[in-house]
Image (cartoon, rainbow, N blue to C red; front, side):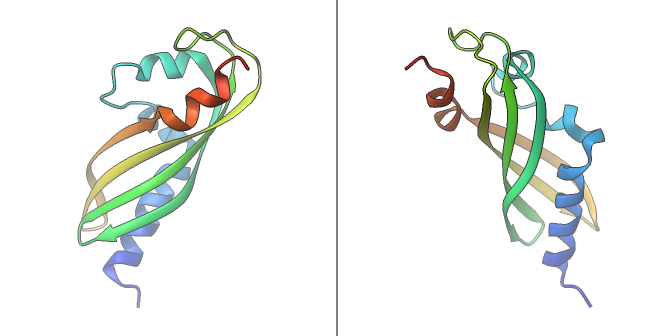
Length: 115
């Protein structure tokens, strides 16, 4: 029998890896989130690490995408970038009740800035 934590990991992982949820993963409370959607195309999200404590699940996710539009004053290069996103999920009875996310621009900006 699976523990509650194992079930929460499976629920969150399935949510992240389901491409139907991509538009949800693109939304964060950060003011530049819509700009990320416009500047980075062919986005793919993969789970790197998940931590569980009771009903709270924290996931570190990698977004791999093509830098195909202007972002933060940088012209597109067409290069592939890999940026980190963190998401916090609240899982109740096997269902995601709420979640929020943050992009880690510290992993993104060095990849797109002109050398």
